Amino acid sequence: MKTQIVIIGSGPSGLLLGQLLTKSGIDNIILERSTPEHVLGRIRAGVLEEGFVQMMREAGVSERMDREGLPHGGFQIAFNGEIRRVDLHKFSNGKQVVVYGQTEVTKDLMDARLETKAQSIYEVENVEIHDVKKDTPYVTYEKDGAQHRIDCDYVAGCDGFHGVSRPTIPDSIRKEYEKIYPVGWLGVLSDTPPISEELIYGTSERGFLLCSMRSHTRSRYYVDVSLDEKVEDWSDERFWDELKSRLPEEVVGDLVTGPSIEKSIAPLRSFVTEPMQYGRLFLVGDAAHIVPPTGAKGLNLASSDVNYLYRIMLKVYKDNRPDAIDQYSELCLRRIWKAERFSWWMTSMLHHLSDNDFEKKIQASELDYFTSTEAGLRVISENYVGLPYEEVE
Ligand code: APR
Ligand code: PHB
Image (cartoon, rainbow, N blue to C red; front, side, top):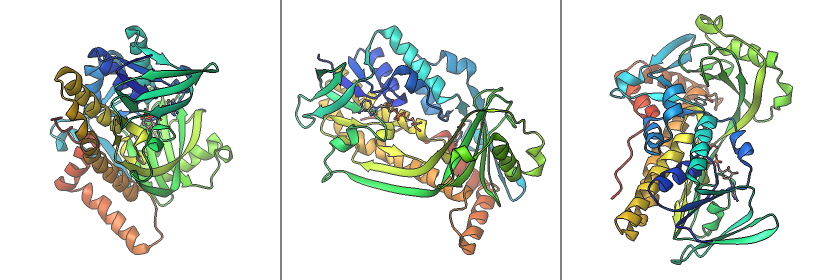
């Protein structure tokens, strides 16, 4: 087989990139090791920056998101027994975010790909990437016991944190930066009305809390727990009691509890790979970087990389600019590191990560300053709605 771009991974990164390339007449094949059902079964956050929303519109996949997505012009931060609102609209010059679950994004992108007839091959095994330092890279894989080869011009590694793309970059070239946090997020999904129309992030004596949603009838709640906690030790009742113990008095009465339809504990990690490119191989999304979910950036960083790789590929194929690929890694990393900083900072402000009394006072002072001054609220807002994408040269 031959194509212009092989995309490894059919998560949000691979699907969004594939849809944009296909719409622009650039041929691509997606290789995915799981089944479509397994990909769709993943429960992930969905707070979309404006940049992501624009990418979905450009990809022609925004009809349901525009209809069902919930525009949010602000969110709330609960601490010290009070709740303060971050007016995103006011402090980001009129921008907002859209709450629309990643599962829905993935479904819309999968449905769109089926309509385009672009090729996606699921349940592949032993994907290997070859000759990316030459002009004729190729990818091999196994399917139903047979070995296959796809010759291509470029390879997009959209295969997530545990994929095959990142290790294809030699250890001698690849530098990895990582911070593991000593807590995880215990999350519950329930078909109950959200406690508030806006997200409520918070910190209390007992730890972090987040009240989020998927729709007006489906809520998503989190409390942070130590890494030795087991989800099977958390009954619904225990979870609801813990969340109530962390919520401010003024809202706890608004909480509607109900049976959990999903419950899990996710660890918190900051991670970046440099460079994000090796010859004709490009790392995209979780394959290159991970953020703690406190800044709601994971999905948005996938679309950040996709935006840059897509526009570079337009230069390569439409403007005959093969040199355009040289800027990919630096372009991505400039924006990635700013989002990594914001996600780390929100995590450090809202979690008990230190027993040091001085550091606890600094944390309380940071929260007070950044939620009570225009300068502070502007910093939070412009990072939460997403910093602008740079132009591709
Ligand atoms: N061969 C083929 N497919 C693979 C391989 C492989 N060797 N390894 C991984 N994959 C597939 C996975 O099965 C998965 O469907 O690549 C896909 C990677 O998808 P994600 O992990 O969702 O990563 P990405 O598309 O970058 O999306 C990032 O997803 O995990 C969330 O929080 C994250 O919101 C962020 C978003
Ligand atoms: C979620 O709705 O799952 C969610 C929202 C915001 C975050 C993290 C998770 O920062």
